[in-house]
Length: 203
Image (cartoon, rainbow, N blue to C red):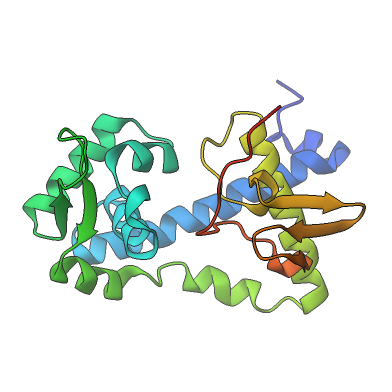
């Protein structure tokens, strides 16, 4: 009990516990901002997240199975959210794939309108992050991107499309390199969500 990351005494003795507690606070901010925007348009947070994801990702990722992995929820949860979005006329289902049981999801005109009202829900958080100087942002991003990769490698985070887990990524001594782009990657060029990402096959 005493070693809980949420115990202030533990935090004073262990900076990792302080960081975990800090990340929990930031996650609360994200949820609050998302809820506030969701209430304005009469949708749930997961429905907003699904619409935003569909708006900015390729068709092959916009299906129930992938969305469930993306948001770490069950397929029935995503199916229920998609059913409501479909009933409200915010999405369109495309059954043109070879598997007649599955479909990809696209935004309708109404869905695009809702996105125009909600895609910026995280701006208050971004506004505060923008106040850090370039060196602080570089350091924060490097730590964050490596943390996301480690969480994925340990099975805690199911989906990630960061350079570190991509088959095109290569580490040359201290240099990050992309074999697809055939160029060295600076720290700020490492992507967390790359459209060309292909999962690295473990040996």
